[in-house]
Amino acid sequence: MKRFIQCASALLCLCLSLFSVASSATTEFPNKPVRLIIPYPPGGGTDILARLVASKVSETMKWNIVTENRPGAGGSIGLEAAARSTPDGYTLCLAETSNLAINPALYPNLGYDPEKDFSPIMFIGSLPLVLVVSADSPYHSLASLVAAAKKNPLTMASSGNGTVGHLAGEMFKIQAGIQILHAPYKGAAPAINDIIGGRVTLFFGSLPSLRTQIVAGKLKALAVTSSARATMLPEVPTFKESGYPEFEPTVWYGVLAPKGVPQALITQLHMTFLNVLGTKEMRERLAQDGVQFNAISAEEFGSWIKSERIKWGEVVRQVGAKID
Image 1: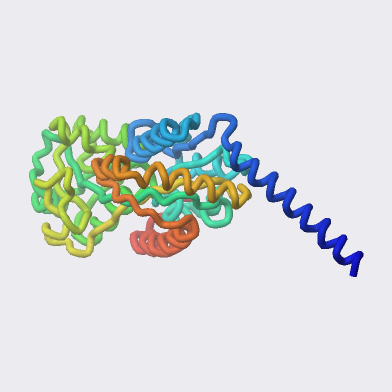
Image 2: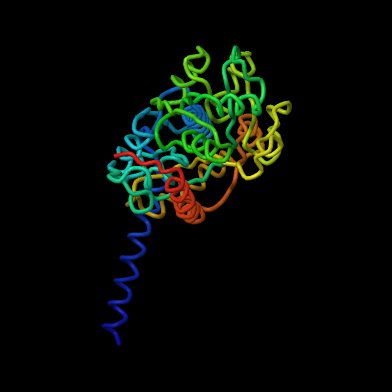
């Protein structure tokens, strides 16, 4: 009995020691810059949101978050780099629908698995897409654009193969019975430049990446994919109003870490992002860009990724999209 008590006492001391070390590690985190990988080039919706989040967390928590753009292959290059990083909490990524739910079905040789290679940290929110054309475009409504596309193929820019904007265009092409030729770019910014210049006809993009150009009169918004009109664009009708009630694709964003980061640190990171993004000030700031903040747990975010992967995988099969 005495020996049992001695062993139990030693085990308890060991557990307390390990707990103390783990607690100390999370308490001291971070003691160096945290890298936030953005899988798209500067200027697009994901980049704008990532820099806003990084800036606010750095300002509030006195952290040093360094953003790093790693564009290419619909966000796959950046996500693969994040997945292969040391799982110590010092490399995170801000990913979205394309990288986590679409690419697994689109790319047969994807260099990462959204569920096996990452630990979800924070679901930020979702927002609708906007269909835009250049300010000089002859199309002033969705109906006029559809009528033209039924006669001759129109060109559609996207921020890359497999992005939500790309698949939204493919979905709309099927639903409207029109002809659209796809022109993939390496990000939203270069695609938008060619839309403004009239070199490509139309583009499905997020509100953050398009708001400035729409307000400046460089782009015309023809319709939004939300169920109700966007607060930022009250004069722009929804696709539902325009005769397409089933067309409501959205894009969502979240922060992840490579698999292997200790659970205590995942919890600390989640609470940090939640406390910063969940403030009234930040929720209102996100709403300005059309982002609806959703404070779900890290575990619920993981389940969300799984369900969205199934949903968008079916869309990829439906439109026949595939990248070798």
